[in-house]
Amino acid sequence: MKMIKEVKKIKSRTVKIKKSLRFLILSSFLSFFSFSLFSQIPQGYYNTIDSKQERELKTALHQILKNHTVLSYNSLWYYFRTTDVKDDGITVWDMYSNIVRRYSTEGGSVSGMNREHSLPKSWWATSGQVENYAAYSDLNHLYPSDDEANGKKSNYILGEINSPSFNNGVSKVGKNTYNYSGSPSANAFEPADEYKGDFARTYLYMVTCYENYAQQWRSDGLNMFNNETYPVLKSWAKDMLLKWHRADPVGNKERIRNEEVYIYQNNRNPFIDFPELAEYIWGNKTDEAFKVPEDLILKDPALISPVNLSEIYFGEIQKNSLVENTLLLKGINLTGNLTIVLWGTGKDYFNLSAESVPAVLVNSEEGYALKISYNPTEYGEHNASIIIQDGGISGSTMVSIKGVCTEHAAIVPVGANYPDLCIQGNEIIYRAYSPNNTVAVLDLQGRTLYKNQCTGYWESFHAASPGMYIIKINNHPRKVLVKE
Image (cartoon, rainbow, N blue to C red; front, side, top):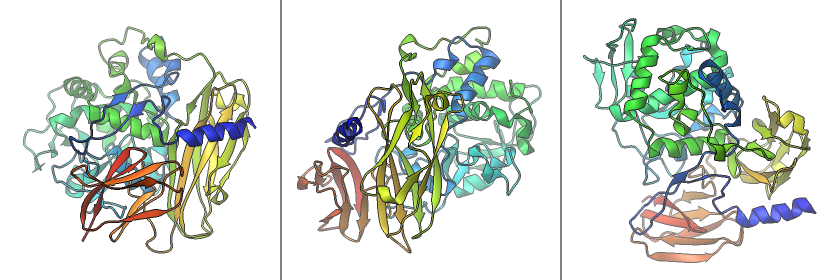
């Protein structure tokens, strides 16, 4: 059968970096390892913004961004492990303080840190209602933050501070003194210069993705925003954000993060992909039409969402409980029904709302929301895959789905890209996607301590002493810490 052949092909390449994934995010743990980094905008993703300008361009971007996979707020620390981690693979990237904190090998949150809405959640809804909006768990504006800095920042606007009441060397809080007519001398938060562009592009994303929140902007947000879809930014705020955007250009940190968020959420920050979009919408090119590069225009049938080899994590739940998630299916020029198949050893714990979806729904502006449920009846970590094919597209798209059934402290994933790796005492416990994969354990000098072929089941390596080890499953490395 065609589907079975495709599944076999997918199984053989699940450990490879795909062209359709369009990025490589590997870190050099030592000079012993040398990896390159590249990022490529997916073909077809920006088809609909071609030749548009100003207000129309912003709304066209809104239509692309608004319907994305809505993540669970409770699972954000799981995603932060790959979206907000420094090159060593374990240090939290905190844009709010210079305190060094590390992710625990046991999983979960990091002590002394919060899940910070960089655009305050009080700006679009009242307490008790805010959780009902997609922006509440949107990774494109949620970052791990030092809790003291987060508390001082409160729900203040962005601004520039001369005499801060709080200054930890990275974050400042005080009265806004941005030198522009009409800027309020309200309480404001000013990030470090190296992060001003990051925050500016985050805000530009938010007022674009959530253009439909126009009449809901409230609280301190009305010091920066108007209740309108365009330009939405008050003149002083527009000028300040553009100044920050220009002065602090897009860097590798943002590019890497944009790709990681795309894997989980199936939407991107366009102001990272095309920084010049800010000029076409609010800046010095509003009288010009934006042209999408010809090599990024796609005319053949294609699935734009979800991303191939992306992942949905259902978190930890109790036995016989049920949790649901939504996967957005969105395509271009599909010619027939999409076929959707559950595959893998843990497939019996998951359920799909549909096994076939008409092309007309997936091609639509809204796309199709596929419902996925996780209902475990046994303890442990459960893994399966969703295979999407047909509809005129070439090949298949695979989405990994994972959940943990636990009563107390069960196996907790170490990181979002390596959920089959954890530490229990002196045991490094791992499981590969395929029994054909190889596993190697190395010390920090790059010496191989153990190497073997995986079985596809849970296996372990006993660490003779505490310390850092490097685990390579099919040549993809990750650092792990074995404690005393």
